[in-house]
Length: 124
Image (cartoon, rainbow, N blue to C red; front, top):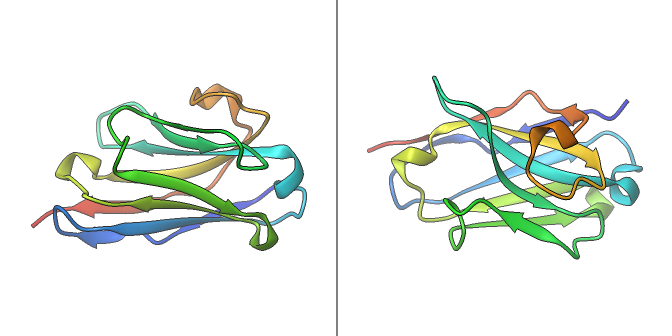
């Protein structure tokens, strides 16, 4: 069973930055799992934000975050990061990381393991 723990959320002003972290419980994380970041705002469906393949050779971003968010991973630390810059109020949501073997896209159904989420609030 793979466990994921998110951290790094908080309150930030528009235009500010945050870095989210997703740390996995198993060394197998680095060999088998694509990691995705998703978010869910109140009253809205969960949406895919970004994903990174197990060896970092492939990444994807939602159109709404391209050019502002950057995903990366450090397999030696079993951790994936989401650097979020130029944050907007519409980025406010609970952010989740998820793991799926060879997940090729941002469809939540491709991901088997989920963290508990971390709140990101962008407000002045």
